[in-house]
Image 1 (cartoon, rainbow, N blue to C red):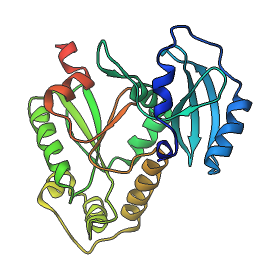
Image 2 (image 1 turned 90 degrees about the vertical axis):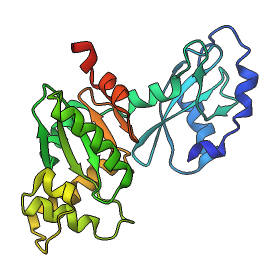
Image 3 (image 1 turned 135 degrees about the vertical axis):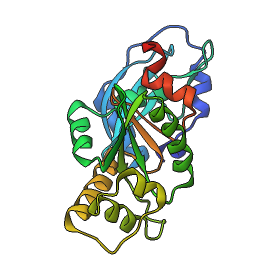
Length: 246
């Protein structure tokens, strides 16, 4: 991670500033970034931060949007997460979520890659999962309860992790033999490795990696935002907007 190469301590010196200052140009910061990283990191935008004295620096690295901070003169590059103390909000994560959210076209692509669906609720969520992932089982159990209550429609995408032996073949067989959720739950396996199944699983893996997703379970919500790791029901309902609609 590029944050390991930057001096977090510099942030403490800058937090004392109480006035927003003008930000250095993209060209200026790009010069400093290139000297520090030498890894093809590109500065895509700079703007004044909500944190007095800092500027948000938007970066692109290996196709993934990232974020750092600098001072008004561009003398320091700061990587790390900033929390707003009054409400405990991680403003760095919020900005990153916005930068990397799925576009409308991305969501259409996801729809084309869905392996199977379950439920008939008006609200929907994509679940990126792996048949051998133990944390996915926890996520799926929570979603099953919501499906049974008629709250949501879940769209499952197969993302077998490379260290799970045979997981990719399981995903392909489930798609090829049209076994859906029941087959997925029961650990269905067969020798059927049809070309259509292989293509869908490969395209899913490649597309999600391009979007910066590397683990399971990962949820993608209707607004394009995503979350990796198990969400408990209350948090999931809040993210999907079910409680607000009741």
